[in-house]
Length: 253
Image (cartoon, rainbow, N blue to C red; front, side, top):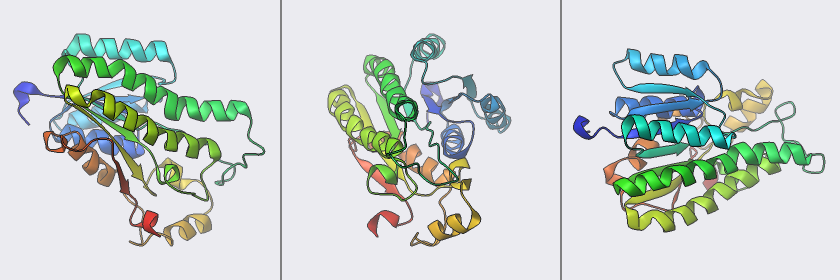
């Protein structure tokens, strides 16, 4: 990457798991990374990236707080004068003993919490960042969906599945609207990836789920980061409104 035109990339949920893997990958590729998480562990994550000689700024932020999101976007614009890449990765998926809660027992509050973080917050971020990308005539939006947004997943609650399916529909509309401005918007739908979410449930449950993956293992955050790195690059300019399934072959079964 030409450091004279260093691009700025924000990654939500970058304190650990998939988000950290994405942030590390983009930083190593030469991006100025804005690592966002509501947990202050993101400070240590950004510091570790910086210790490798890369550019990373930590932002402790609850993405469900619209006013705080608007301030963060304004701060990034004021500091860097650009906002090139947005990766909406942050998400929550509350479970009961590692299993999904029946929709018959789900409260409206539980529904709203997950939709608020997993979908509405991503919408707000896209809406606030897109004008900055339009101003500069270039941008990349990468939204993290899930296999649960593509097909029935035994462990995915109705709120999580709805949010992740909604992410795909939302991304297509965004892609259509921003395409004339040199901006692309795409989804990644991960399968089972090493993260705090995949540690939920018993050892027997986890082994059973791995047994359903054709390649015979769980994916890594770095593998998701590799796909994000491509989608964030100049080389992906003719790819927009798509969903890339990264799941070890599970979706084809």
